[in-house]
Amino acid sequence: MGAHAAAFFDLDKTIIATSSAFAFGKEFMNNGMITRQEALDLYLTKASYMLVGQSSEKMDTTRDALAQMVAGWDVEDVRRITTETMRTVVTPAIYAEARELIESHKASGHDVIIISASASILVEPIAEELGVDTVVASEMEIVDGRLTGEVTRYLKGDAKADAVRKFAADHGYDLAASYAYSDSATDVPMLELVGNPVAVNPDRALRKHAEQHGWKIRTFKNPEPLIQMPNAREVGIGAGVLAGVAAVAFAGVLVGRAIKRDKRSA
Picture 1 (tube, one colour):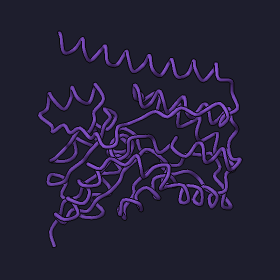
Picture 2 (cartoon, helix red, strand yellow; picture 1 turned 180 degrees about the vertical axis):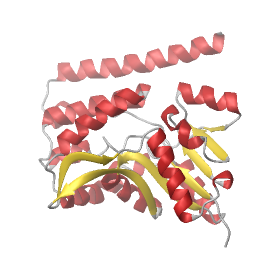
Picture 3 (cartoon, rainbow, N blue to C red; picture 1 turned 90 degrees about the vertical axis):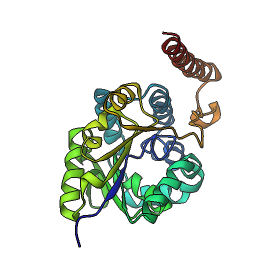
Picture 4 (cartoon, rainbow, N blue to C red; picture 1 turned 45 degrees about the horizontal axis):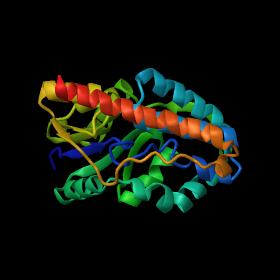
């Protein structure tokens, strides 16, 4: 049989209207795996990510912070928590349009692969929920059943593109006939590999690149990406602090809207 097509999907803000790296923060806190302060830090980082995205440098900083935080965690505890809370934490954030698109690719005989910079231990339960059998993701070192905090494989930018190229060669995929979907300009190297690149809910840099190169642009709206801030009881901080956090998040929304208005009027 000759080479066949595949569909490579980024995960965060492409398939799900949230970040897989931060989605389970409350559940990890409830199970005593992170402190209330760490839970708050996760919420703040998630809020920033959802509002303005992350640069390549910020992604590296976040990677290092998360790796340090999970050092010593029992892998089975992580898998249990993510599996048990999957349907209440992540399932509601899956874009209906992404589900439909994944099923459409399957119906067309295309293999679907989720490729993510997030750790595979977080991506795999989401893939299972979507009926996707193949995950190519970042990997963390495990010794004696526990995470060491060392990242052994980090799929961002060129590294993600290299992983797609190798995976396609190993499995006989025709990249010229294949598809790739992402929201971030950091994934341009991956998108450039395939004959059918698609920018989904693209950040400003990716939208500009997609328009310049005639790539398809798709907008997924269901569900609407919402930033749910923790209440004071959940993270054990004062209501005044939370009010400040909410104000910063709201200000970010207003700034984003103002920028869009300025672009339309220009």
